[in-house]
Image 1: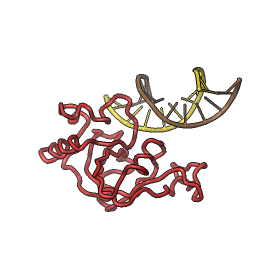
Image 2: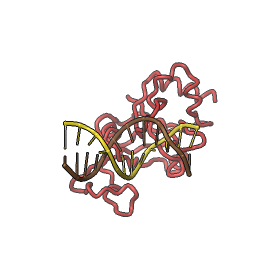
Image 3: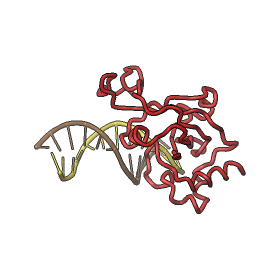
Length: 153
DNA sequence: GCCAACGTTGGC
DNA sequence: GCCAACGTTGGC
């Protein structure tokens, strides 16, 4: 089983929204590296760290679980969607998305400052300067530490 | 709102 | 295939 960090702007879709909905299709990813993680590497049952970006504070807000493997992202050929891409069609889809189930919401968001304060998390991708990927792998040991922080916060 | 970092596009 | 121009991301 693998662990992932997936970013979403809470103004657009937050952990509260996922809690309400129970599950969501992770539409709108328009970056090849992030797409490839979903298509090639994500497996059923993989755990998702739900990250709030452009937020106050930005950080990890809760957990989800991958509940369906990657399928074509229908928003990519929906002209009304802000994620529309004219080069993607039902016949030849360019973008894909997995489905994510709600698992838990942390009592408090684990902010970037919280993450930076933990010596063992210094290697996390999300803490690297200029890192803009919206989906990135998280190591098991990193996940365990974050889980621990979540329980004590 | 600013702007650094980075990805993408397109002319050549 | 290079690289300048441009667009986007996302912390602050």
